[in-house]
Image (cartoon, rainbow, N blue to C red; front, side, top):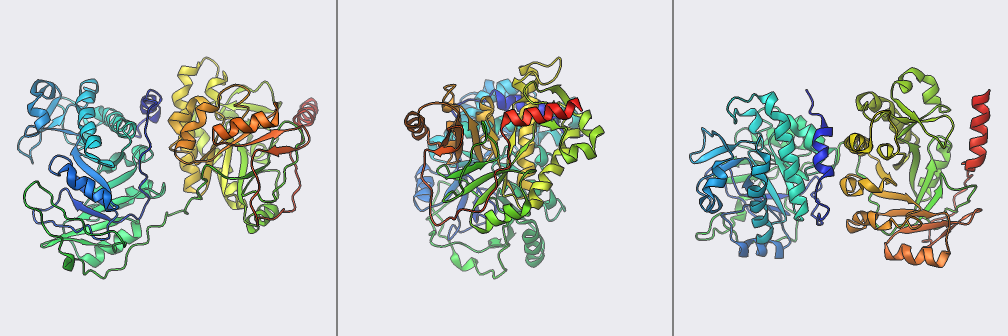
Amino acid sequence: MMFDKSIALVLVAMASSSTEAYKRLPAGLTWTNNAWGDENSKDTTNGMKVVDVDLFDEKESRIQQLKDDGHIVICYISTGTVEDWRDDYKSNKSGWDKIKGQKMDEWAGETWLDITKLDLIKPLMSSRFQIAKDKGCDGIEGDNVDCYQNNCVQGKSESDLKSYQIAYNIWQTEEAHRLGMSIGLKNSVGIIEDLAPYYDFGVNEECVQWQECDYYKHFIDLDKAVFGTEYSGKLSNICKEASKQHMMTKLSESDGWVNCFNGVDPLPATLFTSSDDEPKDDDDSKDTDTTPSPNPINTIAKKIKVPSLMTWTNNAWGDGNELDRTSGMKLVIVDLFDEKESRIQQLKQDGHIVICYISTGTTEDWRDDYRNNKEAWKEVEGRLMGDWPGETWLDIRKLDAIKPLMSARFAIAKNKGCDGIEGDNVDCYQNNCVDGQDEDDLRPHQIAYNIWQTEEAHRYGMIIGLKNSLGLVKDLVDYYDFAVNESCQRWNECQYLQPFEAVDKAIFGTEYSGKLSTVCKKATTYSMNTKLSTGGEWVNCFNGINPLPETEFIHLKKPNYIRQQELAQHHQN
């Protein structure tokens, strides 16, 4: 049974707003494991981008040296057990003892956490995360986060504990991100599908041996790194499977780790030790494996990046019959259903990124896909929209029924050649869209649905933008690739979009009233790419970039008042 993400997403909605920027770890990063493994496992940092160290055993000075040498440093800690030899345990025994579950059979002095006591766990584990932050760690590898499958709490079954485990793991990601650190999911293959959107990378032991590597597609499809290890098997077979799964895998042999990938220059071998005793020299002679490096390409497609400063054309929607030129504009928004495939292809040939506008939050009874499957669409309808005849809010609680219908719309966009999607009407929860449900009731459902949209777009190899929905920006900025807004200056709301700018993601803004010089001054303040509608055309607060040409283009989107009249006439007939 899949975990209901709406429960866990309530935690996201309550998360701290002070999240710092943290490092993204895309698929294909090389790595060194100096944190754990077989007794004799040694690993070189030469040419490796990511280095995994033990938080408590590694000196802060060496962590800083690794970072100075260009490495990303991930610090290993157990986030799922009590360890009675740690200094923080010894200084607060009574606190840690209150959250003990069952003993771990494999490790003396180590006890599972009782994950049903999350309120007591949080301050203790938060202190460990702060130690990692203070030591300079870029990220955390949290181990033993599969308590629910290990009889870890007396009297509780796996099904009893699964929701607690997911809630605790999501809290860990929020806490790491609040402190500006990345975090990886260690093993726990049974909950990868639920947690991949929250974590920044995956770490696995022996998925080849246990035939479990397929689960990691949920990370790879989101272009997130997966670091794998195996302790037995033939190197060629392991590397073949690693390449198939786009994992960066190591095999432990008698004299150290052997990689299924090559190092990347010019990163040096940093003087390194896995303890505070005498340092061990890196033995680069061990790195003689000539196995071809796996190709770490996303199994669907690499997503286009949309950095904060990007010019754009709006030929999809607006206040009336605005015209907008494509000359010198990098990104062009068109209406998915109204624009011809041939023009989308021409725009792309001329060097533009093409974003296709669709409503992902309503049913539209004039669309062909609605007319061809009216019964299914009616099953997911909520309340009528007051401002658009023929358009009805989705009942976002019915996500399982919505998914196949909206996925089919995304497939249309992919097949037409769209590089991305601008999904409109994704703020149902604030619009009294479902009878008997208030904003608080619907908010977790809205977040869950919006996150699914990002996952689905990325699965198809497309980017996706968050339209308006300012109340959800902090919860969703990590999932979306850009933002689109109408009238944030008019309503004094542009500051809510700053989380996108903070992570270098574009914000495309429009205003329908105001003085151009004032609008543009504010747009500059908020690093937004803003247009002002003058009634007949869009006027930009930014300049075009050569040599992008003017693509022959027909603006097919009719003014709102004409569309309303036509739809009203259609329904009268």
